[in-house]
Image 1 (cartoon, rainbow, N blue to C red):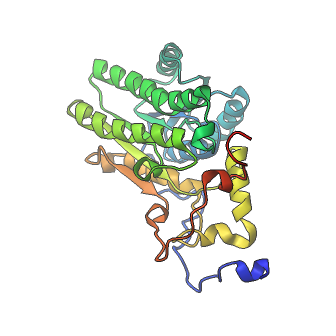
Image 2: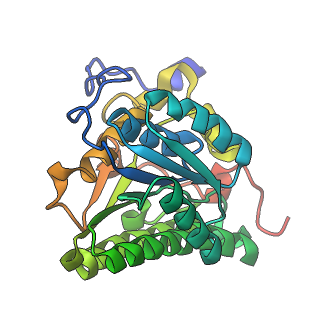
Length: 305
């Protein structure tokens, strides 16, 4: 059987429609005029894409990340939307540094009205191969770092008596489990629980807390290990065939969802995690496919070799 014969036939269906063009806005112009939005991991990828959509709607930005070069390039790009943009190098595992970043944001731009917890760490690995350091690094960045950022944001609003909005980026395997990503799945399950817990605890003070889960949204800044996996499935448009939508998502679609969740039009939405993935995480096959181990899927030999 040839590769062409083995590939599933392309369905004769339209799939979900393409989104509006880049630059379109889902909310009225100026929705975030006078508001500061702080985005972790905002120097690249989906973080930068979300920051751009807030900026189109008039927001000032503070972007945070660990790469000074990426932050500098993103700062220049995002400034093109007309608002003020500042950047800060920060490892979100360090609460003292986080406090310094908030101090700098307040001094330069004011108290952030919106926090987007986008920074995370992940790489595919069989669970048995994860070292203690690898486990700690992913949990500390993805879960503990998200908590440190959210705690600092909330404490400042609680002290000032002002409302605020938190969006934490999650993952669908927080519900389903994530074979090959045990460390990240555990961390994202914790992030989802924080969303649900803190929305109740801080709602009386006017602090809204929501989660946002991206689907498959390829972009140039994907980690190499994840990019390699997508490349193996990308031949002849096969990535699209793996989605119920029959297309992948575009980063701006996550940005539109983020700007809505933190907007005045979504004030009564709190404690919710919105999944933006074209229903891919709910997909099930009528006939269960054969099981292959995570080691086999990653091309690794038997454990211990």
